[in-house]
Figure 1 (cartoon, rainbow, N blue to C red):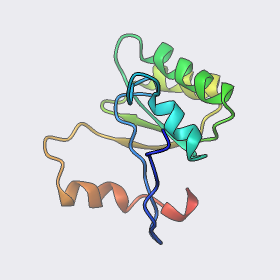
Figure 2 (figure 1 turned 90 degrees about the horizontal axis):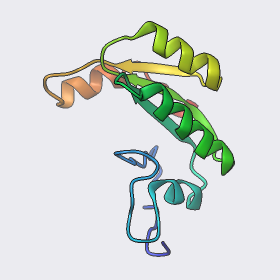
Figure 3 (figure 1 turned 90 degrees about the vertical axis):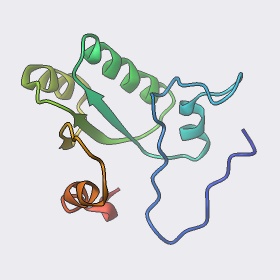
Length: 122
């Protein structure tokens, strides 16, 4: 774990933990350990599928149990109003924005979503 270091930058830095909090980094550590090591604020991403409410609520519980702050949640994919309302109600998380299902992820796609962000907020 000591080999992981943050790059020096004056820009905003996003640490992507693709796959979830319990994705192993090696035999001893998980993505959640890396978040904790860097005292990073987490942003959860939730996509609708069977089990997504459970998965999201368990992720929130894991972060809270380690006193890792959560900036909010991003919903990914098609809108599922009831599931999203349930998640927001039971987690108290701030809804940040939605990422639609995109056919292509390119510079224009990124700029489309970036224009709605206030990176200084995070």
